Length: 95
Image (cartoon, rainbow, N blue to C red; front, side):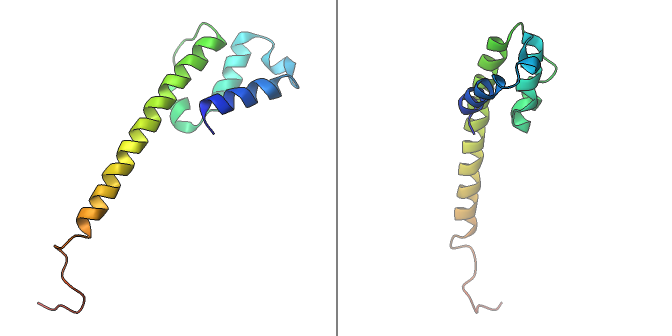
């Protein structure tokens, strides 16, 4: 689930539990609690003035995390392609 989808779902469901999100600080804590581990790790320990600020920061962090994961995936695929190249002996080959 993307940060945008999570935020939309969070806002939708928060209507059913207004006591938990009545104060902006409580809202930010609840929002942070539901984030993916990598995103939560990046935002924990920082001060945010309001919910909008934490949301904007999470959007930027999510973009960076997604970009890094895409780069890592390409590197893994390139390594697999290289490892399965012609440097491996043919089946049945004995030294």
